[in-house]
Length: 180
Image (spheres, rainbow, N blue to C red):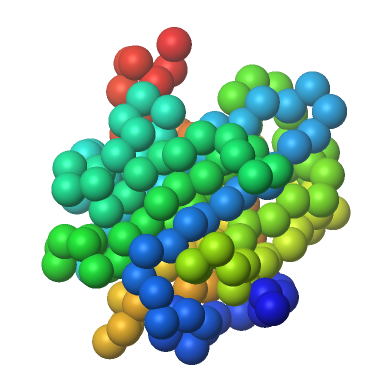
């Protein structure tokens, strides 16, 4: 049975499942809204030190395929495969995010979630609604992070500036390709 997380809840992955091959599903929607759902692989300083670990529609996997974008499936708007024991030592955090592509605000989203599935069984679900946000255009939904062992945190932190603000927070910048 899945553990229900609230914003700020954290747990060791090993307390949730013995598995290291995980499925991460994100469900987010709102009337007339379009979302880009991504995963940022961050270093010990929580920076995107290697652009190859920004996994999104234009770059669907990390170099060693420890993070893979799978697409919409099983009722999820977007999904990922994460193989924790294959993530390089330089990556200390995986931040799963949703940004608006076009007009709108995160306060307009309906009920959504981020969930972790291991061995075909859902082990964690962090549910959220638009009522938790106001003018934000991007949100960090959940993180896997390394603190002696891999852990998961339900984040729910928004950014008014959308993808540009999110990338700057992680030490990156929007390339011309992304802005078109």
